Length: 273
Image 1 (spheres, helix red, strand yellow):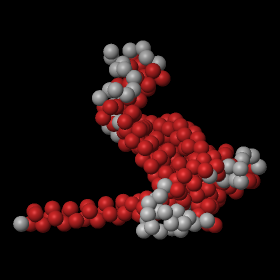
Image 2 (cartoon, rainbow, N blue to C red):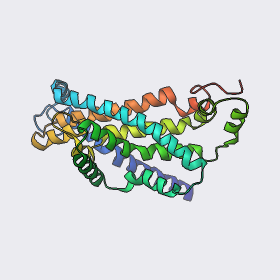
Image 3 (cartoon, rainbow, N blue to C red):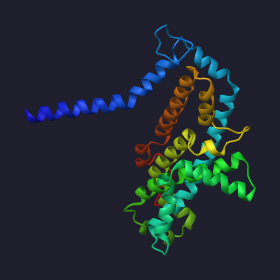
Image 4 (cartoon, helix red, strand yellow):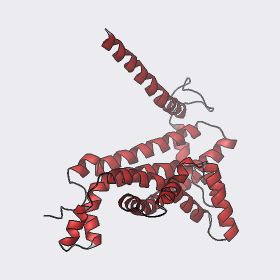
């Protein structure tokens, strides 16, 4: 009797969590297809007019392109820096290692508003760089901790003697890393990159301080638009952003899924081959 009661309670609790997580998304989608001219559920019928109007807004299209390009740039740089940092602090013990780990994780616990304001003040003080450069630096700082954490987890328990064996067999350090180390930590690198891209693409806390009139990201443009024109098109843009992020994650899983990596379908060939 007790096990059945436990399963019932667990099922009810799981259902509540699903409703809590997915309920706002369902409501947002319902608002985006309303036929009314104001924010409401589709009581007066279903229409795709707001998606059509969204595609006619060049400011949203330009901002979306900026967001995608910025997220790709920040993710690529963060993957290189974060992977190198994770390898250094995992493999070696050196003075200042704890400080590096703290600084690498600082964006996770420092308020985004404070980070954005600090970067704005710094760039304004030295007088170099525009909104694009400021945002790139900010998003690298924002996404770097996710790469470091995920790659560090992948390196936990890694046997560095494998790389030493490859060096003894004549491989260069670069080849030893590419053919021995990288394939084994690739799931962590891919997972960190996916997190970094989504975090960068959806960020508004830092970006709102650093954008300019000629360069805005989609979340900031959406925030500014909602401040003076609260229509269901806001919901349509939000749904489009969610679908894009979900499609990106599914694409990453499809192309570089963890199971494929573990099966050897992603990465370089085995150095012993």
